[in-house]
Length: 432
Ligand SMILES: C[S@@+](CC[C@H](N)C(=O)[O-])C[C@H]1O[C@@H](n2cnc3c(N)ncnc32)[C@H](O)[C@@H]1O
Image (tube, rainbow, N blue to C red; front, side, top):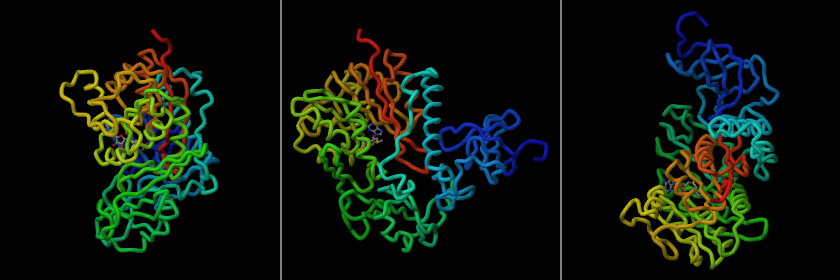
């Protein structure tokens, strides 16, 4: 590189270090931290600078591998590499390498942000678990939901990384088989349209264009979750509404949550950020008519689905609204009632919960929600997390208040991307 201040477009030679959140690896250049995409730990690469702040960190994209990691493979991501479409951050990493990468990112977050010691038992044996069938599928054809954008000529594609420009594609290899068979790339769409495809476990593919069903078709899908013990749960889910994306994710997460919650008949459970009731329905089945599951969800469409999905389960009580507000109101801090009961009665979650399940969005639950959860006096908190850093922040908060991380599982429900799902269990260190 020429001497003088570094600029976007400069090419650096970098020795690549540990993976960090977001699919980047850490490198250093003249004392600077550089976040590098398309690289692997241990590699030496030539990388083009994509961001060169005067102060703070830089970003770079590897464009040439000088010393390759044994975990490097040809990327399966369409239009991969610098200037290509966003996502697929780990598509150049072998499947075992992806699991190790994600384990390292989780471990680092919990050590650094969660302040767990190096020998913390929850981290000692951590290995990221794979969804059934993923090795056979090469981690492809896993997604029951995809979203595309039409370019100026109406061809389906995706946005270039950190850009509004659309790159037309001929396939999205992560899309489940029924979506792959729906010929999304052979059609012409309205230029600029958003095209969503949903492949429910039950029935044919639903297509939404700009949120509207194609040719006035149905708006909702039916999903089924069948557990190893033979139980089966049925759900209605709004076409564009939240549902776990990997075809095996609903079953995998319900199984893990039920195991972690370990509730029996008569138990009182909270299910926060409950969506269409993926966990509410089986939890209600576990606690039976003598128990109670209080679920809180902020999205009105998901709440409407949940209301249908808990039909006949009077022990499931649904509360609509922001989780923090609903819990604050329960504690009498917020004045007027705003929580909408669904099935069953109740203006706020029961004051005590034996177990709290929470599955917040990427930002995590935050201090106020964690305090309200701890105040309910649960024997265990089952925290389903899609962001290890947010999980680590909330774990640190709970640990400062007399709770401990007693177990941790991680699942690769997003092969070829940097995303990873955790199921953590927190419990009070002692009862006072
Ligand atoms: C990760 S999803 C989990 C949903 C459900 N547990 C599942 O697995 O299908 C998070 C859910 O939290 C809801 N949500 C996000 N922020 C919220 C908030 N502040 N208050 C209430 N619900 C919220 C979203 O609408 C979404 O349904």
